[in-house]
Length: 315
Image (tube, rainbow, N blue to C red; front, side):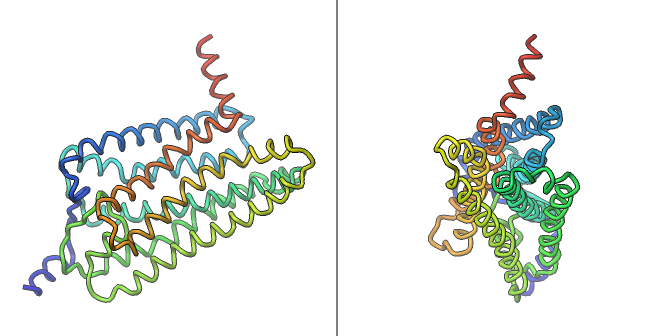
């Protein structure tokens, strides 16, 4: 019987996504907040892109990186939610093997790219606050382009081996994934054989990307805080710190849920499976929804540009 199963699932043509096992009766209700978050993410991020493109005064490094973040958020949320909603609404659970691996690649690639964008934004804030007179000469357009290219290439290349490794695994257990989308760990759990290379490489990518990025961001903000606290007046300190507030909020909204989800999936054996799956969806949907809201509300230039746009249309 074991040989039969091994033969059946060594090269599965499709996977079956179960959605959120144990909460099948609530799938339609769960889809409502998911859909609302996705709509806000789509509208908010396209608004950021439109405003920055339209307003010449926003054609500076900070907003270039913000546009990269908006594009990354759009791809990240779109890579999971349409399929998730098709499971919830139409019970469409099948996903092609290659499509599953492609989805896996896009999720982890753009998570890595997004993390790199936060490092680039932290660098921009560091130069703007610690070396304000040299900001325009240090972060020129060619330098920004090179940083952006490095961020994209790092995420694309580091994650690229994971779908190829996954394609080589023998699937001798089942082709049923207890999840709403093809994340790395749920797919790994279906495979059998010696998976140490894949497991170690996954950990290597996580610690290389997250570990280094958090280190660089922490280092940047340590220098930024030292510069802020050296300012002579409280008003000057608050005003300068306010320019970093939006960035700090989106960093926390990204890293805290991501690290929590990573730890519970790998080490939280006592955590209910449906909680892990719900949280895995939340940490991929909430940051793309929150980022444009946070920047739109807290960044005066974007807010002023939006008000000017609507006032012109009203006139």
